[in-house]
Length: 308
Image (cartoon, rainbow, N blue to C red; front, side):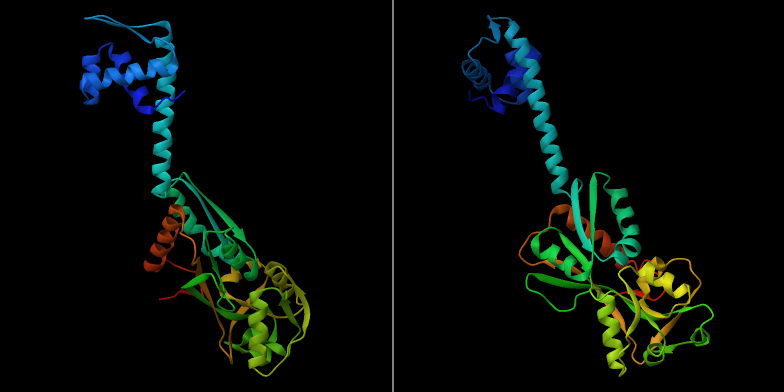
């Protein structure tokens, strides 16, 4: 059975108007082409849909049922095209964004809120994890793009600078170094150091900073979660070093943060894009929303700045 949307549209117009003349005027086609379309539909269905004479058009019982079903099909077709149009405009669908936990919890929520307020039919899937898994998700196609630190450039991705944040010493409230306006890495390394796990980009950068300061700080303890590290510091078990964007995740314990110097260490975060895939429309709209925040220089936590 070969039935076309053109035939259904023609038949539905005639059946509703009960007139070939009126239907032809509505559709802006000739009566002859309209008659052919309806006749072709009847042949394809193998049933008579209309009774015709020189003055009147009447629906047969099969014609009434055909009109009901034609209306359903045409309505679904229009709705489907409208949904596809909203998808193409970035108004409908999903954005899959891989990112670091601190970015997911601190930097992105206001961007997602503004994005969803404008596009309530869009869903944002946050795939948070450590640096290596975040970048793999972009390369493998699990994520449309990412916001992450990048230890080294990898094949299949391009980078756009987004923000940078500075490392601070994180100290118990009554620690002797808490009275300083700034702390050196060498001074920090002489204290029991509470480190983030070895698979974290934060750990990679703290190890490099201690090495640059001529020290090797052996951790007194380590944990994969920065909130756990913060809890250990607040309990007076040692000191730590964390980038500014992480601080809101550390918790409300009694902690003091002081800028770290000699060297000053800044962490840079990038928008990570695939080089061999076209971004879905929704992902492009999300990046526009993120760029709007950056261009407007929207407020960031202390110690975090937008990259130019």
